[in-house]
Length: 71
Image 1 (tube, rainbow, N blue to C red):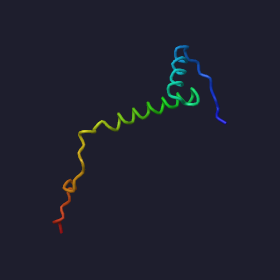
Image 2 (spheres, helix red, strand yellow):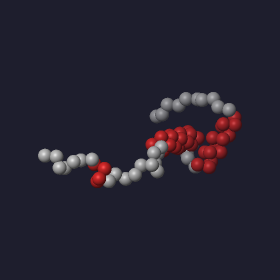
Image 3 (tube, rainbow, N blue to C red):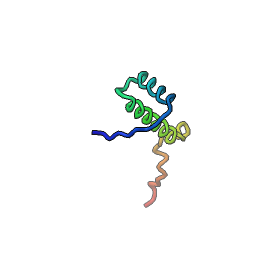
Image 4 (cartoon, rainbow, N blue to C red):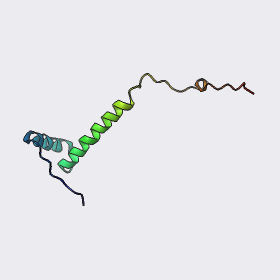
């Protein structure tokens, strides 16, 4: 059984959550909130880890900087 906690939010927030609940189709408002949290986390991670996308090129064998002639 999951523990629950009551959180006070404004009427406008409640209406927005109910609208999102209807639009997103989860079983409960709690699931709608969890879905929004996951989307936000994903957006933050994508922004954080894609900072260099477009500037990073593929690794090539010539990038190894190994000198095989050393003996």
